[in-house]
Amino acid sequence: MSDYDMEIYKKDIRPIECDMDYERIGKVLDTLTELKEEVHKTFDPVIAQAHSAHKSALSARKKHEADLTYLIDKCKGVMLDYRDTLEEQQNDSVAIAHPLPDLDNISYRKTYTATVDDRKAFVQHVLDNWNEWNPVIQLRSAVLNKYARTMRNCGTSIPGLKIQQNQSLIVKKKKEDE
Image (tube, rainbow, N blue to C red; front, side, top):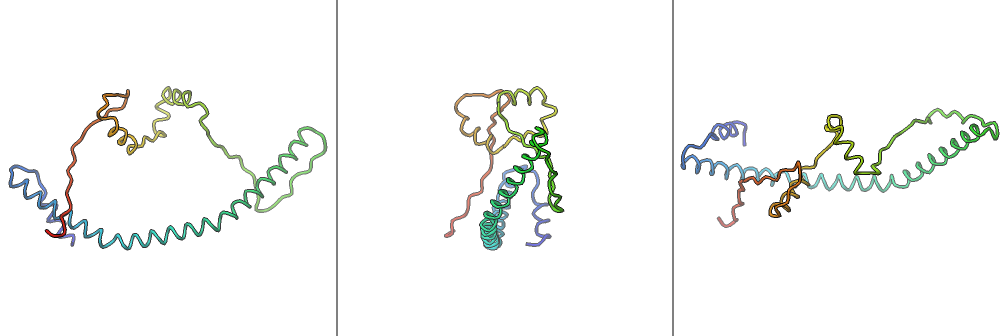
């Protein structure tokens, strides 16, 4: 399908004013849906093959990296333990600790991680400081939509959560014998 064909379809989709327009748009929708299926039939095998190759490569890399990652972490662990021991000796003045050997490609940096150890207190803090936390909070709409489908007939409500029913239009696939 050319860009020219797409322009024709774009111009053909305009507000419906009568039943004939509705039927015409229905035929356009049906045609566009069929064309979309053809696009999928054309590209899905290529994508599936690429996806399979990607998964195989990731699996092979993961297999090769696993032992290396373990050994790297082990090296880092014993080096950090040694550094900590020297720092403790220096702080306790038990012995005169010597400085760590200077290695060109090894350096130390501080890293930080956050773990929520009291969810209720953390959520309250977020609520109390909403302007600061709003950009950080990611509400997963797929999870909320699944919840909405589950709770739609229960009559239960949650403050701040609005369950709304919408109508969507589905185009059924044509049977092969048609």
